[in-house]
Image (tube, rainbow, N blue to C red):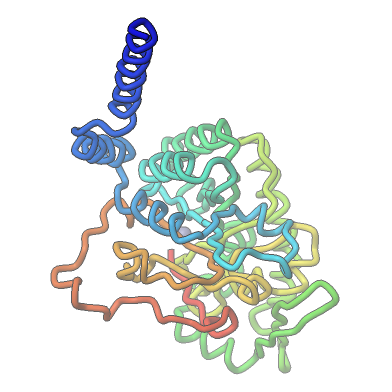
Length: 345
Ligand SMILES: [Zn+2]
């Protein structure tokens, strides 16, 4: 009896001791402050805490994050209810932040979470060979992580640099007058989907037919240059908000939305295409909206998020923002309601 009691007691003591050890491992009394320190350290390590918080918050809310490759290949009738297709436009100022944004995406989402559109060999920057090398180095680092990388281009700048059109030096007012007088922009669709047609009403004063033909050649040449330098296929673009005069009248996004160009085989799509706006609400950081710092303002839906890493690295909550919603994103009830798109950067 005594031996059995002793065995029982020993067993009990051993069990209690093991349980305590387990409990100590799982929930140590100091775990809370330690977790906080670790979290702060992670945020500091990634160097882009605003984006860290944005992705962390929306992931908790059930959003999924895709790159454009996955979006393009997906069945559009079966898109997730809460979807963010991440687009980064990478200018020289965005390279360092882009490295950090990729770390955040790797940490929270994994691979194929975002497409980085890099402004490699833009005619306004191609003289800067140091910058071109920085772009290539950045592209190579993304490629090592199997991240989707595509060109951020200005069709207008490429055309001016390669074809030297007669209207090159006309001011925006004159260009607008000519464009409004002689052209009509129409949304049309073919068997593949929605796009744009620019119709010459009488005379093709700006020689847009010639421009379109030449652009196909220029874009194919650009793609070949991109592939040679990066080892990657250039398949689709995000249009750059160029400051060149013609872009204020005939925006790059409209140029690349023309069905005649879209069906030329030079590229598969531009992220501003009309057919994409049928599926994704455009969520851009260009006007520094308040949802950058308050991600819960992003309502359930399907989005194309334009995220410039430099903007998020330098984002600070506006003073008094806790009670100010002037910058907040309008809440759409369906994807089709938010079609107006502004083009920047
Ligand atoms: Zn841009």
